[in-house]
Length: 199
Image (cartoon, rainbow, N blue to C red; front, side, top):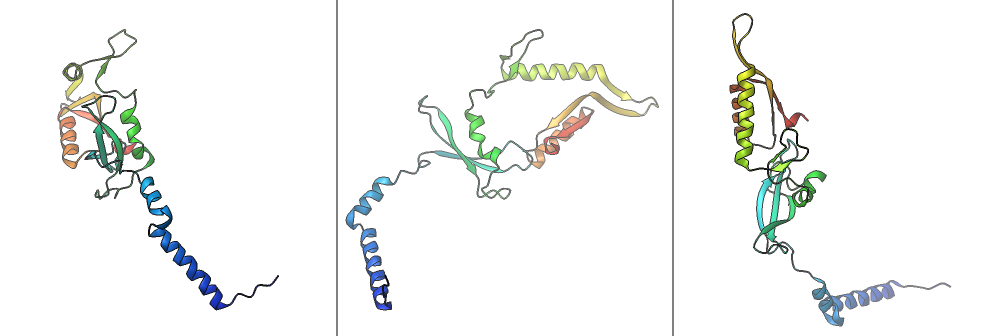
C-alpha cells in the first residue's frame, strides 16, 4: 500500500508532536509531579569534605574525602565517599581503580588501626600503644647500630657505615619530607635506602 506523504502533512504532524511534547514538559499531564517525586536529595549535601592524597603509589593523586555522622555510632564521623580532587594538578579529578576503591580499605573490618606487636615465641599479634611501638623500634635500631656500626674501613678511611639496616621510604610525601627522610637515614649511616616509587 502506497501512502503519499506531502511536505505539508509531514510538517503538520511533526509540529503536533512537538506541541504535545512541550505541553507535557511544562507540567501538564502529571509529568512535572512525577519528575519531582523521582528526584533524590544530593547525598553529599550534609557531609564534611577534606582534601588528602592517595597512599598507593608515587603519583600522589589528590582525593576529596567526605565524612558524615555515623549511623551505627552517633556522634562519631565516618567516611562515606571518596573521589578525585578536580583542583589537584596531578590527577585533575581522576583516580585509578585502586584509588577509587580506597573507601573499601578504610571501612574494612581487617584494617589495622593501631601498632601490633608479636612477642618472641608468641603466635598472635597484640595491639600496643604508639609510645610502646616507637620506643621498641628505637631501642632495636640503637642496639643494632651499636653492634654493627663501622667507623673506618680496612685502610683507615672514615666511612661511618651502618650496613645491617635498610630504610624504605614512602613516595606520597612532599619534597621537604623526602629530603628530611634521606638526611636522617644517611646521618645514621644507612647505605640501603629504597623508595616506594621504584616498585
